[in-house]
Length: 360
Image (tube, rainbow, N blue to C red; front, side, top):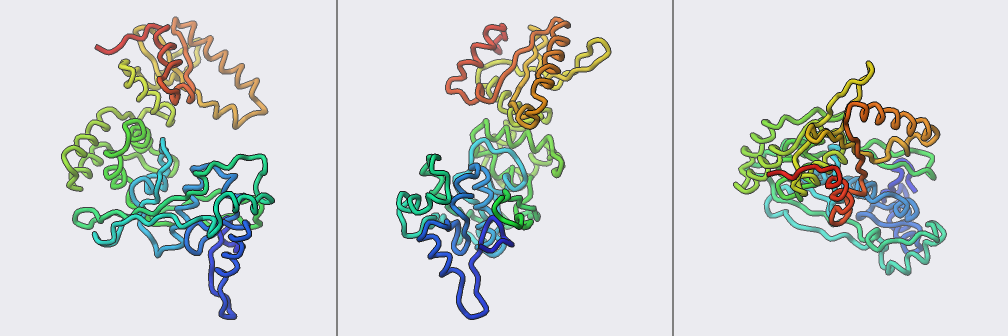
């Protein structure tokens, strides 16, 4: 494989007049490569052992290698800007150069002429035999080309597309510079059609900003939506989202928790409240002052990142909660699984037991 594009390989002409596409197509037939886009390949082991979100970024990279500087938009642009997406996009979204260019190109078979079961039999030496491969993993992503925006005034920016590293390759992934619509533009164009929870998660991250991303100004975003000549219902959706969204949410989990409380008809608690105990300060994710209940979101990330110090972290967390409870405040914890549970059974029961009143 062409390791300069690790973990992707791109077909190219050779000095003797032949073309590597012939060898790559043969490798697909032998179960040694998958075809992501025309002329762009990857090993099945790496693709199947990679998280779905990373597969989507790999497909964005493959699209950028196949096409001539495509302009990514909508969900694809939000992903490239580093915003959290509640649901994995089903397509790669790019902006068509003309209204007539708007269309959807289906994913060419990633396994070539082989049926998926036959391909996996041939590839069994390069993937984990014990792992059950979900069918969706080999469906790929179609490319959806969208009509140019009214007036043709797409604001664009260059972004670095970070790819997962293939440990079997001696060379890491090359930095890929891709073209995407500006964050403001992508937000105004995308969040009105997203489910409420996903829209709030992305919007709050944008309002908060990040290490490599300046915070988006809510008023500027509203003005951007108006300038795009959006339909009235979409403008209303943007305004509704902005009236709910908070820049104080410090993680996707906190954003989703706010949405779930809204869905349960509960009042929104205060965010990032600091309490002082014995000369020390503790910041709470959420606090209802009446009743005095602190709500903490815990995604277990800090424990996974620091396994060697789990006992110490657990001890510090216990001491912190004891200090907060000494002020007469009840502390309850919510986990990502609670926010994704059908019917929100545990979350609903937990909040009822602590007498959180419904709005109205």
